[in-house]
Image (cartoon, rainbow, N blue to C red):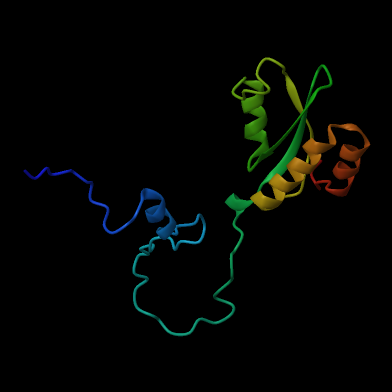
Length: 146
């Protein structure tokens, strides 16, 4: 009498460990799937330097770092493309961190800059935790409007 023993299909691997060792997928080393870009249309000939600019900065892409102060003397540092609207939002209690701690007044704004530059300045200011370091950053990054 013959007894059949069930063995799972291993596709030639001696063990699950051997199979994993063969499957060499490493985070970051595998190519990502192709991106399907829309067809740009027919080429319309050479473009002069004056007609083409690399990475143009538009008004909507400009941001300001701002500092608010409340009646208790506490400060809030943030980034916005429209500081006046953002100040109104803070005073209406629409911001989680400033809600119930107002009214807030605008103490300082930076010059307009890209989002990356604004975030970088905001983080440097927040790391100062007030004091002379913040005062130095404010004086070197002063806005023409404040």
